[in-house]
Image (cartoon, rainbow over all chains, first blue to last red):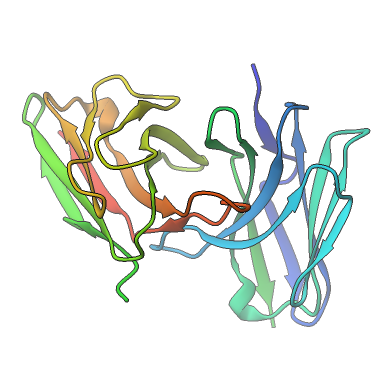
Length: 112
Length: 114
């Protein structure tokens, strides 16, 4: 079936290092790809999205890269901070069906 | 603005009991969604609504019903709760048009069915 998945369930990084969280997807018809951050006990929070016809988009300290050839999406966080510790989800949006399909999530642990 | 709010925050039910989860948003959003999140998994869409008076099924609609009588409210009902419905339930809302990608999530309702 069509799904969005993640390579690594847990990522541990040192404070100040750059983090890269990866995601594989299988649906070529997706219109947008989106990254969400979920802190413990809270709902997901939108971080950044990228349209399917783009390959890179930058935000504040975050960059999303999209490689449609290999159906791979990544989230890069620069100068990772303790406050970045959370579970990160990639999701794909298909306008036709008007819904998000979420991956399983990657836990990012930032150590001092 | 309160954003998206959910009530209750926690609930414990016995098998066969019914309950309604309430979601409210004050951002005048057209779209509203109900998701469930099970341990170690991403969110799965239960039902959604693209406007007042309309609802549609998501990925996992069985055992749930919804209603959108007012634009700002989206109700999720469990008619006869089952242990498999033990989960954390999140409501979300979003605007229509534009990228429409930013869904705003509520804080979640933790439901346990015994």
